[in-house]
Length: 102
Image (cartoon, rainbow, N blue to C red):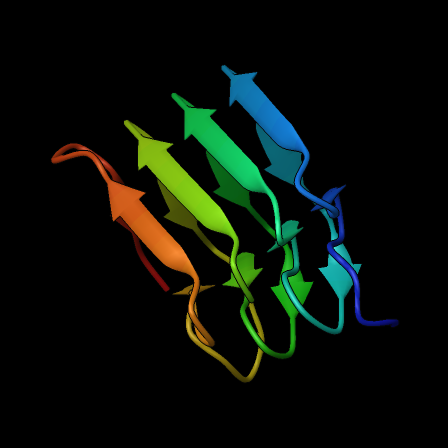
């Protein structure tokens, strides 16, 4: 496992929007499913399940990155860290119906 995102990696001020996507089976040192570094991601109506990450089980957002989770379900992920993490100046927003479960 490298310092990456298992299914999706966003770097260098890129902007990505994903809707109605299932992120499953990813394995990485950082975010088991998604890693965002110095970029922006919007995940809407996504299912993030069955991933494994050390720093974050599912989603790792860091440096000057931004992530918005809208109507997403994050469940059944494994790892040492929380399901979702946004350290070191990152911003994380979730809509009222977004939920993550261990």
